[in-house]
Image (tube, rainbow, N blue to C red; front, side):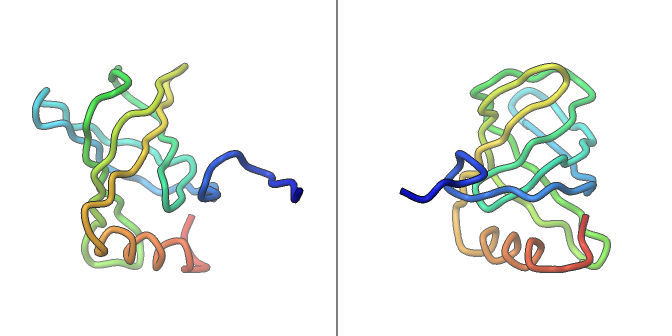
Length: 108
């Protein structure tokens, strides 16, 4: 059986990208640092407290892209000023955007 360096369905890559996290139902709107990113989710550094299970939207602004990439997500865990997001892709646009971002050698 092959051994993997990660436990997720999709491996994540370390990044220093900035993003914006929002939860309109709570009036939450916060800038975040994206610590790692993959097709299935992200780990972010938080400025304010949030709860696991919360539905959110992560907007990722890459330096070489005109428009931010918007991704629906669920907060999977929260610990020590960080949170894990599980992406809930609602169409091909967010997957294609993430593929392009992850493929780009200049990001991070």
